[in-house]
Image 1 (cartoon, rainbow, N blue to C red):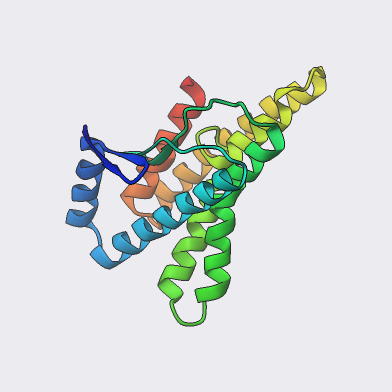
Image 2: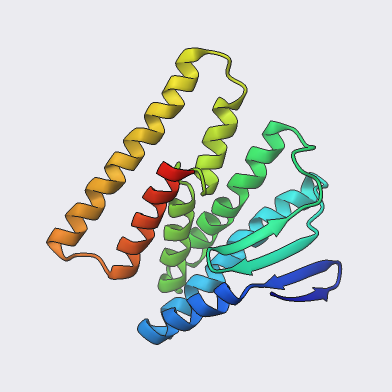
Length: 190
């Protein structure tokens, strides 16, 4: 792992980040990949803005094969509402970019919108799943805990159906199918 400091932030670059980038650039359109990467940075910047508003310090920014992660020394020392705001801020900034740029930077605008919607999916690894967990987290009601489990189970089943449909219809690229398979496995095993 390569580490360096930029102002008050530690920047951590994992080998897996460069490996994924190399594979993507080898097989994909470099303009589309660069646009997606820019949208990811903007997404994380949205989280950082909201963290700054709530005085949640960011100690490090880690770029790894799975994306970009903001690391804070404070772990859940802020309230649930502020945590939900921080989680939704990334998608919020991406959606704002969509509305601002949709008329003249369409590739950027739609990539930003897709990233926002993808991150709002209720998978536990994504922002939407983390928000869903926070909503149901303190619930002592058996019904609420059951509802959370049912929502997650339905989501996994729907994702499996989408994977099967895409594989047999030939409408999706291999990276999307691999991503969805990874999501399903992580939802089931973790």
